[in-house]
Amino acid sequence: MGLLAMTGLLLLSMQLDDRFFPDAQVYYITSTEQGVLKLLQQLFWLSMASLCGALGLLLTTGLKQHWRYILLLMLALLSLLHLNASLSLSFVHSVSFRDIAPLILLLGCLIWLVRSSGKSQFEPKRWLIAYASQTGSAMQLANTLHQRILPHSQLCCCSQLDVERLSDYEHVLFVVSTCGQGDAPDTAKAFMQQLQQAVLPSKPADFSVLALGDSHYPSFCAFGHRLQQLMLAKGFQQLLPLAEVDQMDMQSVNDWWLQLPLQHQESASDPVHLAYSTATLVQNQCLNPEQISRHVHHLRLRHADLSYQPGDLLAILPRIHPEVIEQRLSLLGWSGDAEVFYHGQAERLGTLLLKLDWTDQQAATPQALIDQLKPLHERLYSIASCTEGEVDLLVRKYRRADGSTGNASGYLCSLVPGDPVLASVRVHSGFHLSHDFPLIMIAAGTGIAPFIGFLAQCQQRGSTAGHWLFFGEQFPEHDAYFADALSDFQRQGVLSQLDCVWSRQSGEYVQDRLLQKQVELREWILQRNAHIYICGSLSGFGESVIQTLQQLFDSELMKERLHTDLY
Image (tube, rainbow, N blue to C red):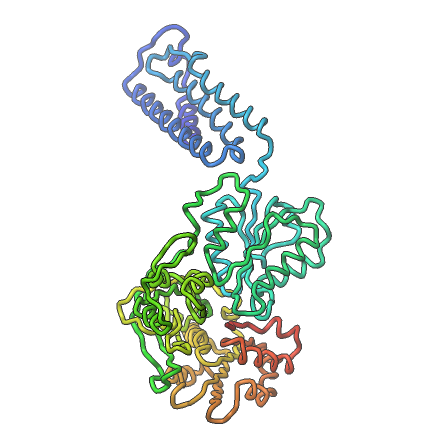
């Protein structure tokens, strides 16, 4: 279209008259004029090629939604045909009906198709994918579904979604996680309040919920079920039953989306997978070698495309070493060569277990064990750095009762520099640094990891707000992780207060120290507008710390100032 406009301007500037385009005779023109006309012809052919390419692209990507543009392009092609005939070197050729008949026929077919097909029941642009994510997994999965399955859909976070907008769509897909004890992610709380107060819509959209969770917790997928019930109570129609996804089991995700009534269903042989980058391990240091059963490792991974903010998480896809599986099978008296069936296919037991998430499950027979296992899934770790292209992790090696190590922690702690690691950043937007407010950071064990990244970022920014860290572990002589870095932060004024609580030495826990420091805490929060960040295990530590803070501060204040990364 731009080339066509430029050609028109050239024609106007030349002020061509009848001596170039007579009705029935030929006039000679100068070589300069002939060169100009040849240039114009080349521009016309280039314009026609561009228009034909655009027309073909629109026809292949979606006739229904682009038909108006297609009609305009076809009219432009007709105009170009006529102008090209007028500017031909013979100057006497005219456009006949035979020249434009195919375009007229195509135009008629197009109009007939648009009118006869009516409004598509499942028009792609009428889909909305809304996600509510606490640790970034739901957002990552929603992005994958958007790119892979519904590229014409709208994608947004529930924090940006107005309930009234739901009626603008025919189909709404929710991808939501559950956090805490069945709570909504922070990004969905305002939306749920709106939904509870909403009236029955005049044109309710249909919807489906993809609920993410971890079946090890009693509140498995609880928020997804609560969202489903509230949507139904408000008059929205269920497109598909709620689907539960345990620990990012992609088989469950694929089973769910293949039931969606899509206009152009993707091939069932090409399932959805989450994308991972291959990072390289550059450091693996055990920080407490004396703690035989509680080793903590400081790992550093390098990859140019690992872009993140402190507070984000790194998803690791573990690999199981064959010798680990053989050792565990030998303790049970089973052979890795035993034949078992998985999804109807016969496989070798030892080989199949390399792909499945065998943690603490027990069974009387190999087949009974296989029947209760899910595919090996990613694990999330808090990032303990703020350097682009490098990621530091703090990993505690988990040991089971039989002496074997955790699938992910054992894998990571056994790596040597140069080993490849499949990893992907999960954006944890609710746990990013607030603006230059004082931070009260509360951690236990490896939960100190994100706060090392926080303090390093504050140091880089030249923050003068001053920050306070509460850290709990067992022994000061073994478990003082990042002691040198913390001393540097204190010396430079980035960390103004540090409270370390050693439970095996004093019998005291972090929540006890919070109560002792409640006067200072009130000053920091009420007068200095400090924000509170908590990272560590939910069971025991996290629950106790939150309960203590609720005793000290108003619940509304905690909603605004409290940020958690509990697992």
